[in-house]
Image (cartoon, rainbow, N blue to C red; front, side, top):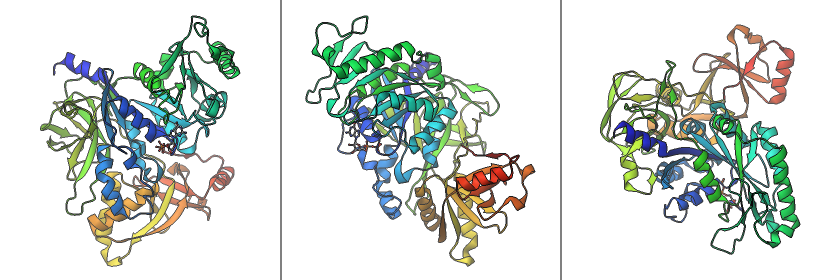
Length: 525
Ligand code: GDP
């Protein structure tokens, strides 16, 4: 591919993740998008990923689902001249640091909100990570076919709970049994909710925003209310700002129903016009790598271990940041400066064979790995060394005390822990007072995986004692006095030897802050 062709290919890419609280409708919307993309909907293509109860089940069950979960981690399809990559962000019990790290590999995010519930905790957490990256965030208010909260309230929540400016692209006309459709100021039309019809039905708006010709909807109070609100927003609401959207300071808001396939295509069409193609990536040295650079570069954002105990292979997910991937190409792994041949690559869910053959900046490739890669690794071709910025650390919320069941087998225990921590599978802390090990995770499943892998890959049985939720806050070592540790917090250090407190709860944290007003406590992401 020459530079012109590469630029053209890269500009076609739209790489995003859907973030939401469990049950808001992410799976349903994803299936709709795949349907538009011409990926034949096999019963439960995406549904099969939904786990039931991973945390309680034994790990073998997860292994059986693994095949599906790897291939559908990235869903690629072509739609209206664009090549779309949807990166899966697992929720429920399989929520883990991987979920967060996946957000490091996307160029924009779609936030799905259950319009009856408003903003829920997991949405908030995922939002904050997108916000920190400054990527565009598009909002889809879902389930309007059910009784919903007033749309004004939902939009207010975006501003007040999440702190992002909202720009409604369309506005719901009623909800639940009296849901009539959406008033679409972006496309100058009313889209009618007629679930019994297989077609999409529109009414055009004239230049004043009134329905063209005679239509009985004009006399409907519910329509009148929606139109009044839309008019009010047009006059007194936020101004549309492409610049703010680009920086993640304003979110375009769409309404609809994923289940009824209503408003999803309207959303997708607008989204594709506004969402960014892959942009430059910052390096540690402070330079930027342009996506159409002829040299291939990428970074590992996720490693999925294969659970087969006979092969210790894993799959390293690489976000391509520049250039073109070619099967069998040699790259340099920056951390070790070793050359690695990329010959064994996983295929993700795609609608054409061609997709997997050409991968350029914006695309994701899955590399079979026998232990070469770590989370955050940069790979590149060309003479110039490239190292992308480090992936951030996240603040775990769940903690377990961990020790080796068999005290005679300390060696394999330590080796296993060390490697799994390096790989980014889990966080490790040691207590100041006794040097005990404490594991930290953002989701319960990380512990299950840890335990299983310790046994299977390192032949080490571990004892794990749940400590529940804690609030982890780092403290400047200069300000630390070991006497600050009390029964309501545990003083530990992380793998970088940085000290932090694990607080019992918010009260304990507040109590600490009251007692030591000058001590600065910080969270990671
Ligand atoms: P996820 O956990 O976010 O992936 O949510 P799902 O897509 O699995 O949806 C959770 C439940 O909500 C399922 O029973 C869906 O059928 C239902 N659901 C999703 N979208 C809608 C919608 O637009 N309207 C209604 N009434 N139900 C929906």
